[in-house]
Image (tube, rainbow over all chains, first blue to last red; front, side, top):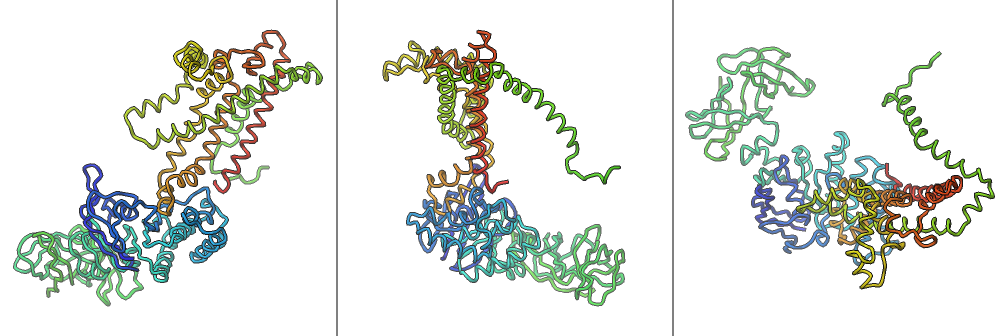
Length: 356
Length: 276
């Protein structure tokens, strides 16, 4: 189902949790709300679920205004952060809950059939008689998912659903959930503060900052053309460096070689991704001297390294064929950077290589 | 020769267990054992004769019946109070919170005298109640139930309150998103989650009420066969130097209480199935 969020505002006392958020989600789309804690992503999710009211703006589902429609009538499935399973019920009863409380409650045999079908779908048919405290975190999450799917939701909301899982399980579950989405085709919104999770799972990622959606795009666009310094800094592993633009060149405050950039003169902010910062053996002339502090992934085509430049540690890669060891002096080349001018958040990307 | 030392996560097992058992023995097991032994001075026939007096039966029935009724009435009341304290924010909440504990702190005799004064046929509340309904509260079993409700209420509030606070609203919100109405959520989610705590509060309130003496004797009127509670009967026998007879009533109360608490524990186990 298509979802339309139009200028939603939500205040808690004096602080605004959401300041005019608009977002539209196509039918069957998987969108992630990504942002640091306090950016309003959970509030937005709760508003969609009907657990929280709005001070202004509205939410439309399939064109129908949801304002004033209570959560129980929205048919929106929610997987809560800590799953919120009913502890006194078996796995079976947890999943059956949404069917049992329905006004047109199905017959017992039909409920049992649906529940078993869902448990099979989430691959835990053998757990139906267990209680939530007798199963693992990953299994609980599957129960929560099955329970949410039982109401045949028009929209599925996942609130940091992988936070409680350990790293190995998380990766598997992420792929599995995305696969399930592709199979069922239910529009899904994932709330997360983990950019890797958001980018891997979602069709589009809405980056939130201080109650606003600052950019909503595919992962690739977000990385290639971030709309604001916040997005550039929040996604990827870019180092944020202050610089000053003079005559089409950005001069870093750190002793790095300047880069060419089409920006007016003045202070600016540069974001350097590890791949754009290349280390060469030997100490080059002039600026750009650094010391290798650590090297990892020596097996990969391009080894990652940490280099110290002017007292600051930066993530970088080794030039092909460069042999560098920890503690060795090196020449640092800035191959690419994203630079934001001081005049608002105007992005002027692609700084080019400058011959040294 | 000693085997390899066992690795125990919590040290001091021997010491803490020893102190616990010694203390339990000193203040619980030995006095109770004495109580269990004492009646048999009368011989088996004597104990049976002593307990089969209609007055004893009436007193035991009254004590356990009123305690059960008071605890039953307190159950929804205590739940409501805990709910108000945990869930609602209003001026004077802290005051109300503190007031719940007053029955713990107040000498029960003082509570008994106060309740008697208010609910006596000529009291502030007793007079209008009698005038309107013809019922008399003080000096009847109704008065006993009232006094026991007063004494037992905080037990239920204080056992339910932390569980309710702990529960948070997650489960209720989940129920709402799954289509449950508010009553359905209360009945299917909130109450079952609180059931073990409610039962514990019920058991505590009941146990306290069975043994309650101070507040009851003032309001009960103490008419043999009508409003005379078992603890009072024990005191009466003691005053007549019938120590063994008093102990026999005590033993009967002990046995009955044990039976009830045992039963409640079985229910508790069933309620807590599947939970760690």
